[in-house]
Amino acid sequence: MNDHPHDPLHGMTLEAILTLLVERHGWETLAQRINVRCFTNDPSIKSSLTFLRKTPWARQKVEAWYLYDLRRGIG
Image 1 (tube, rainbow, N blue to C red):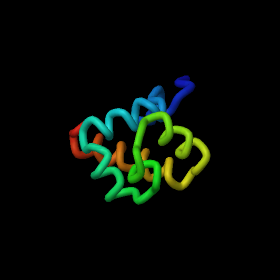
Image 2: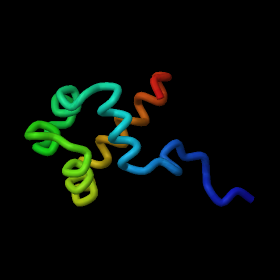
Image 3: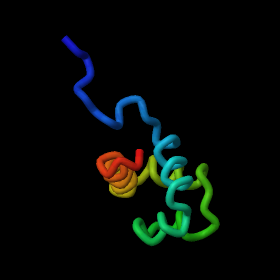
Image 4: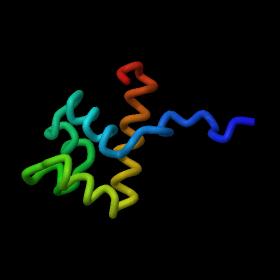
């Protein structure tokens, strides 16, 4: 029996997801779609990861956007 159900997020770190979204869309687009200060004010991967790890609703939005890209065939 398989220990892991088919989950596109399985094995993906938050850092990898965020890095991919920044490379594909840029910080400006991230800030427009998910209006949080860590994307709008001197953004960096490190500061954004700190915020996203402490803020479940924002992390869910980032993960949902990543999954949306996968479904669209971008990922």
